[in-house]
Amino acid sequence: MTTKRLGNSDLDISPLGVGAWAIGGSGWQFGWGAQDDSESVAAIRAALDAGINWIDTAAVYGLGHSEEMVAKALSEAGTKPYVFTKCERLWREDGSVYGSLKAESIRKECEASLRRLKLDVIDLYQVHWPQPDEDVEEGWTEMARLQQEGKVRWIGVSNFNVPQMERAMRIAPITSLQPPYSLLARDAEERILPFAEAHNIGVIVYSPMKNGLLSGGMTRERALALPADDWRSRNPAFQEPQLSRNLKLVDLLRRIGERNGRQPGEVAIAWVLHNSAVTGAIVGVRKPSQVPGVIGALDYRLRNEEVAEIEAFFQTEAASA
Image 1 (cartoon, rainbow, N blue to C red):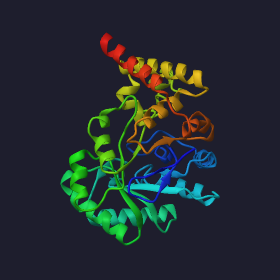
Image 2 (cartoon, one colour):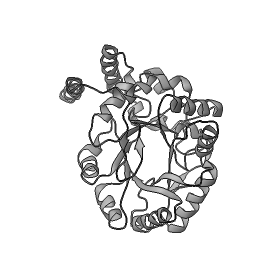
Image 3 (cartoon, one colour):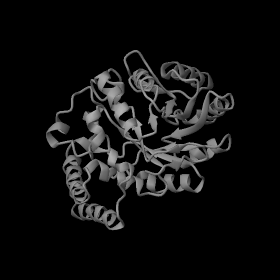
Image 4 (spheres, one colour):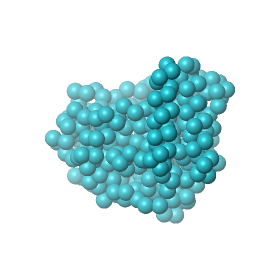
């Protein structure tokens, strides 16, 4: 396994990072349903033991619970990974989420995350969403202050478009960008990924398996029966008419994987890592048994002809639509 330098930082990261969104559990607007905390900790430990050297979480995941589970896993870990977290998403008593980029709010969030994570410094602190847009400059200025004060080592953005990144860069350098990117979410290819690559902004993409849909473990029956407290039950990708097309894509990924001794999820992740702009991919694991289905992507890469085979699938689907 080779590591890659994350943008302008001194962080050399593994191709995969542990995603801690789902382990936040239920009880908030974008929860994935009930989660067993002991399995969360075991899953993180299994991923770290397999060679992953960074974890990505956020204060809002489980309304602080995800960060607490990361802290518990780290307390039992030997080698300490890099810890990345995010600010800007706040929550109400009913679990609904809203955004704030006010300087005072970001500072309070940083202090709270440090307490929950039981850390003296955060390796990478990211603005979760550029909302509200008119406060991007105020929020990024405060992020730079936190870095200057040594509370965070590096600062990055998530879900920013190119004009928003340009505005932030006038204030302070951006170390990393976290966009959604997968075979089923390719909007970043047109402008965002080329911009990041041209400006030495590291890219750590989220949902490379489209929230588990491309993992190989999602069936039609399971997708259509997702519980109401799992936000994916409201995601069009898990519903018809998109679901049938997406499961056909999974069948193709399975065939490619079988030729290489890999799982469908590993093929989906390898496709993301094939893009030269991508530094690493965030892979969510909720229990240790899921780690073997993705960990091979640490060193598995697609051949050009396999990338072309996948592209041909989309061309065929578009022609028949």
